[in-house]
Image (cartoon, rainbow, N blue to C red; front, side):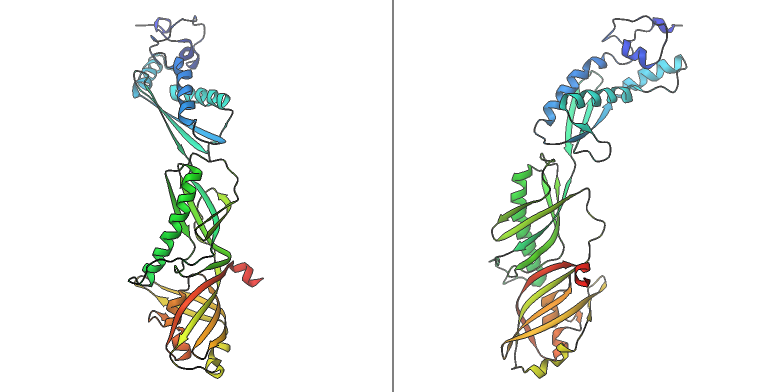
Length: 356
């Protein structure tokens, strides 16, 4: 039966087993545990440097996958000599790689929220593969639409029109961000929708955007993008998307046409309405939104301009034109057929701002 001293182990593996009074040995590739993997440390770090050279980042995390043969070699040795409670080969090697790469790159390791995650795979014959993924960058901001979109939506219904508008905005933002961040993909999440012909003014509509596997991670949080009648103001970099969307209130200006001439007395119900609760139903759920204030101004005897302050998410056109799933709607309130010519978003405010 072999004694400890008869096993060919490199000095790194000897130190990890905490074997005392064992003579130092000039063993590298013939080590019965690591087969010279310790001498691959510089090679692995050089491969990491090459793999990360195009990334702009401040912090990193490195993970390591070893071929199972390294664990088997160490387990057999420790079982033979009843060595327990010591670091395994992966933990020890990974700590050294992280330390060495940190010194070379002058970047900090971050175990919780790293800018980039580096994965190293070392095979049985010491073949080394390095892959890099950056953390998803989540930004919050607001967009303004200062020009109306000229998009053909004649053969689409209202919901399709809202979707067309959103995809058009997303396309504009993606084009600008992809070139700026050198990213694989970008996901756009606006808080609410509007039609292509609607302006979005004031502070703009809130949105979130997720940028996946970006080469640019470290950057100034607040910046703006202007393109094709859109202004995107990026306000903050977040660690993750919020679990639920904050509450917002919107101020809308809309032009409404009627079939009959109107008098001020016909609109008494609007003046006395106070806060209204609007119920709208779809196939899956029932929901309620508040209208806090409505005021009107005559444009002609058959055309009025309404200014409405209501919860974000209230479908303005459906409310005005008497959609059967919304009650009460403007047609029911005034007992008159009406049509929404167009509407613009004057502002979108936090609910707290409305109270204050």
